[in-house]
Image (cartoon, rainbow, N blue to C red; front, side):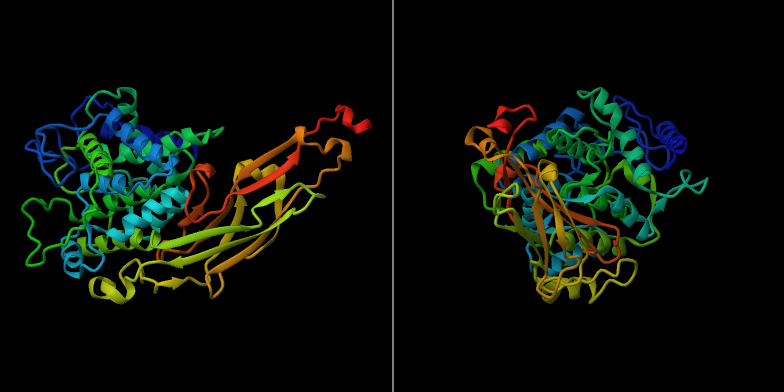
Amino acid sequence: MSKKKLLAVYLLVGTALGCGSSSNTHSAAGGAGADGPGTNEAGSDAGGSTGNPGVTSTYSDVASVAKMIYDAVEAGEDVSPHIEAVLEAFGVPMLENDDTDGALARIDAGLPFVTSNVVERMAEAYAQGRLVDAKGFAEGLVEQSVGLAYPYNLDGTELDDSLLGAVLYSFTVGGEAEPDMPLNTGYVLPSLSRELGQERSRREHLNSVDPVWGDGRLDPLQFTLLSFTIFAKSSRGTHTKSMSLGSRVPKLHVLQSNPAADFIKSKIKDAIKDKAEDELTSAVQDIVELPIDKKDAAKVSVCGSLILYGHKVAITNTPDLLWHAPKTPNLTQVEMTLTFEDDYYDNWARAVLGSAVTDLTGCAFPRKGPIEGKSVEWSVSSGLQAHGDYDITGATTNDLGKAVASWRTVRDNYPQACRVFEKQRDAVGATEAKVSGLLPGWSTVETIVSFLNPESGNQGNDPLTVLYYEVTVDDTCHSE
């Protein structure tokens, strides 16, 4: 998108929605003011409120949740309680893995859900540093026929990551400027989605940070919350408090309780409050238009998270300690293994979604086991980029779900006198793989496996260490 067009989008969205966090207006495109039907002053357990009438989070509250999550990631802690708490705060239940009736009830009502397995997989993805690209996410929405709602579509503008980012920015920049003021109704979810990316980028010490997407990627909660709220638009207006799930009673899964986890969950749910009327209602829904009914929309969102995070990507380096050539070893074999960990295919998926969802998604659950034929692109984290390169790369996973590459260090031509312990240094980083095509119907979504903190014991990856000598051109060892 051109700068001129992007500026026009900012002005259009800003005029329609208002950027000030101290205002109680919702969206001129489809929401309501503070006293209109777009809010629930009585408080509701459904829309992320915890029963406190008229209370919404501040941007500081939201930022504290993002910080808690990435503090835990950096410390190598399990973030399952954090994920469960965030999803519960926005009205998304965690069902038992075999709960066919509960899953059917949620789908029939047009509402998403997660399973206990997918929360565990999302936590593993945080530990592993697995992210998806924001550009591919937005393109995937278009592939699902998600478009812009009136009046944002008047000039033929199509949804993309720049425009979606502009929308999120317009909802959140006022709160960021006045972090202790209550956020507008429906602004809490987009604020958390944006702040997760900003918090992650601050820790990565990037030279250039996008004001919306941060590093241009989405973590598991960003992907899940944004896709859930966008596709929940189709069921908007169905008041979940009075909504009947029929005779089907979902079997809610509760993580094993412990004081530390309970404290985390309580603190997070206390920080995430919104007056939005229904589950997952957010201001983002006023900008988009979906051509599908509530059941099909729920299937799209459920398929997305359960399939994407049901995949496991593991990377090993053999050996994982190298030297700059000519010292040895100076070559490592990098092996990536892609598997699908959950048995949805032979469990409830066909009963709930059919053997394949054929409306828009083509979303068929893979069978449990290795995943063949997925495209792989290889890279390394920034700490290793100056120390070597790939010389052989496998482009797709084989029938065992494996792709293999080799990474070779650079060569140093220093005299023996320079190769002494005092001049020895090390570089620690990660070999990375980007895997495409994990989500049928979302062909543009790419999963990126990398490290947020190699020292934190990330699951599924094997840190790579390169030893070398730091020698300057005027070092006296050259003449010894």
